[in-house]
Length: 289
Image 1 (cartoon, helix red, strand yellow):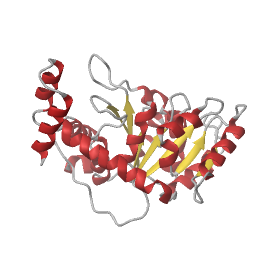
Image 2: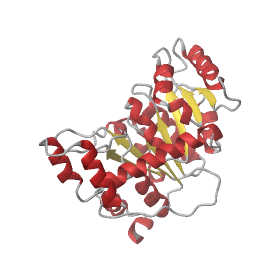
Image 3: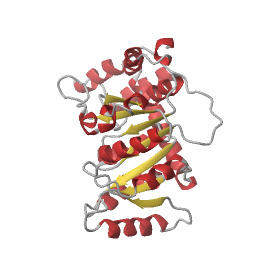
Image 4: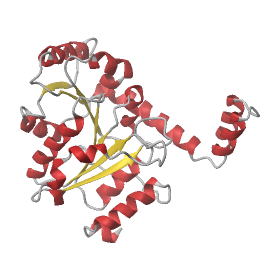
């Protein structure tokens, strides 16, 4: 830990690997500050989340912040490792003047049911503990399971693109219910303004309070500076409070099941037809009481 705090990135990588492999657990720190320390950037595939994040990182580093990124990638079916696709789009890590203020770590989804692994929150706590100012979690964009990002973040930013029907998909997945801010990327394309207006209308239905909807173009840099500044001080949406705690409770429950010493044994019994789901669940539940 001391080496990681001193700036040794190899030591930090070993710490994060130990957490990811279940060899080390980090307790949630006590925090009284109202500003966010962990932000989730989520949304459907293809909306430009990685390119947008790269632009935001340039802005935040220029504000004097040190930002760590946990990029959650789909697991390789053979090795279980992450595909590292997000690093390809992160030009900031190659910027000589800024790269020391940015740390990017790819994380494989592995066996978790949601798009964000259960260990990501502990990895974020570790990064904060060794001196990084803020942690951004970029999720894989896997549809319905994206709501699990609520279990690991102080703030949730939903990214969408024009003319994709993403608003409908996001609403079905519950993402709009959880978002503290919404960004429509690719504002240079036809339909972006219309889609932003549709989102604003949808967000205000039945709610007096609704997150702001911003239009940006990560490709051309339009609106990036304003959004970067706004996101630093974005407040948690009260309308999303109950939904967020629901996901955190479900995440905690899932973790208890997955970490049960008999989990794999009981899974084998179900596969072999020796035990029903209800019987296996009862044994897992009783073992955790």
